[in-house]
Length: 102
Ligand SMILES: [Zn+2]
Image 1 (cartoon, helix red, strand yellow):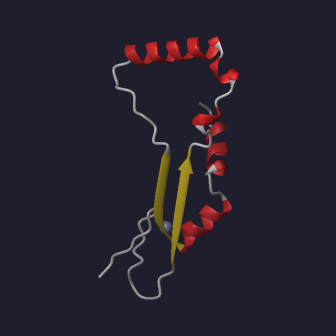
Image 2 (cartoon, protein in one colour):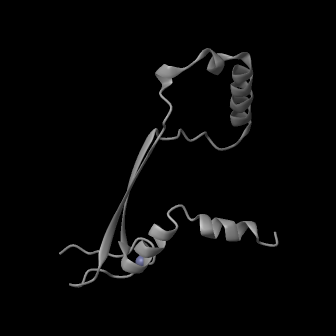
């Protein structure tokens, strides 16, 4: 038997009648590397890249290559689904964070 629990709050949604919502997200780089313009190849960018690479070499942690495409799937309970639909990117909570006394 499949077991479902909310990926946000952990509510058990296995029992019959529990409302369960599936959230699928797909994020990918919108820039097509084949569409580089002359502007992209300006010296400034090369220098900037050299600086970034230099910074990376100096840091202790190895650089993590970003995936070009990321697919995510979440199971949500009704309450968390409602919250997500109202504020998909968590901007409400991010705004609150900005107002913190720190
Ligand atoms: Zn939930």
